[in-house]
Image (cartoon, rainbow, N blue to C red):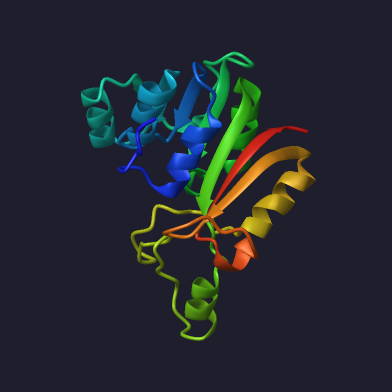
Length: 199
């Protein structure tokens, strides 16, 4: 496999999780770097859904099969278990109805990968609690007025959310900007990536 120098750590672990030859749907695929890598390295049959027109043009330029749609409207055009994996990486916190989006993802795929920025790092707690300012960090790089994020959740919030909805967390990975975090991820990890199945 290539060293995938162009991918972030969370994207690299997703490439490792996806099985070779899988059928994949990437919700909110952006400009398609992850999906392109999966097609190239894991020979997946993949497609994406994206709402941003410019991002879609970049996906098409990469030869990717991407549809213009709003994932908040659901995935009614897809039958149950149409995919092996659905990816919601850096998308879950941006949708208006994350509960419905995840429910639909778990309906159309055997496994769902969710990755999101952790709002409870010590750096964000310091900025909010001591400085009294809305946090701006490497994983939350936006000012309050231009952020695409609608929901600010922590790793512990998400684990509790899955428990209450009987969603099974098969694997979890935590990262800061440079490495994998193995202890106290809610305090130190900038990003969490979870492999989910129906409980």
